[in-house]
Amino acid sequence: GPGRMFATAHAEVPADRDMLASHDLIDNIERDLLGRLGLHLTIHMDPVVTNDPELEALRAELGAILKEIGETVSFHDLRLVRGTTHTNMLFDIVVPFHFKMSDDQIRRKVDAEIRRKHPDYFTVISIDKDRIRRD
Image (cartoon, rainbow, N blue to C red; front, side, top):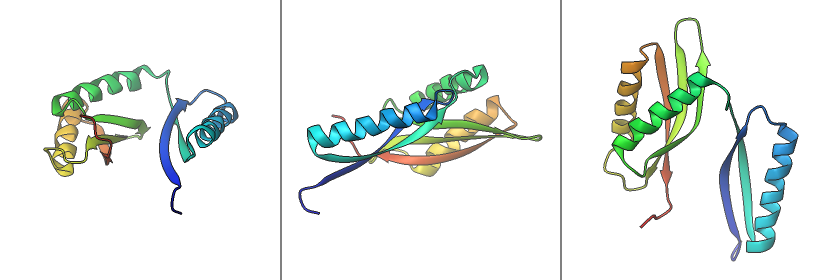
């Protein structure tokens, strides 16, 4: 209703950490922000594999590709689904709301760069719009 503030956020937590402990931490953050700011926050918890050298190398590659597209472009929720004939590489790309490239142009460019280095990888890319003004 009027005068209430609501927000959502994603929190990446180590996949090998106890999920109950991570959930407890996130509950405390939500409660703290409600008490201090009156903000009704819902945090979605994403477990992230942090001890896979291949995934870490892909994070670095993807970061470099996105930096070429734009300094304000980022990604999250990178994960791999390995199969017998190919590997699906799933992730979300965050772009400013009024970015110079279309979502489809970004997807095509990133897919081409990944496929050039990893021909057996299929990308599954979601585009998130960053609505926070950063100037």
